[in-house]
Length: 318
Image (cartoon, rainbow, N blue to C red):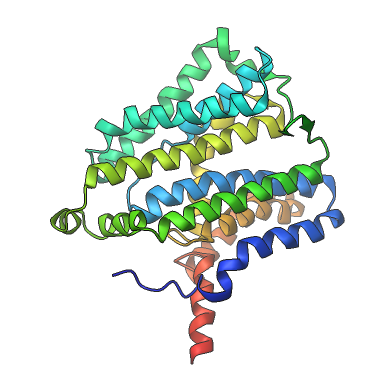
């Protein structure tokens, strides 16, 4: 039976909205550079919310979510920059395309388990990366695609970095709300059962293949949304944008924030995005300081920073 999530119960359910209000209130105090860093953190938070859905809730492993981010990002970039499509239709085609690709690939791949599934999804990411490199007539290869239109809402282009951050923060809140609702639904209960024991879940009548595939497609949709937002936020895309660095960053954010927790993806995305900026003054020792900080976080918060919420909740009860 699902245990109550004390870290996210009660007033914690309002934390995403409260976080958005804090950003709205404080962002005028931030410089454009910090606002841009927070914008990247917001985009990665969406990516990691999807990764958390598949890995944290369903208990599966995927090293290939960057493939779906690339499908969403490149589709939106090509249609808007080369064929003058509007942002919303191009965005929709990219998301639907990523979802369909996840369904086609996931149907056979999700029969695998453990490290076999991890290797299959890693291969998927590498295949999509190579396609982005070699199909230069469409993707421009390593040269990349430039001149991608900025984020827009209807016919209004969002050019100011602060307004871009507002826009991205609103999408993060919506993405988190949707994931949390699914987590607390019958669908989420089925994923929890699969995560605990696939054999036991199957004995209880849970359709393992269906729920794993559905979780995989949902995670792919989140990745495609993040990929499309990324290319319009930057105005440029190349294969390196969706390379292995995206996979590594996503995993760091997921585990630092707290895998399986509601707020972990947002906390992890903010921490991993801001730590390099905090240690920028260390110059040659920046990477060393960053690595040491990650080790300390994982030592003192092995279940992620979000686990501090449960710690304080227990303290209040005692």
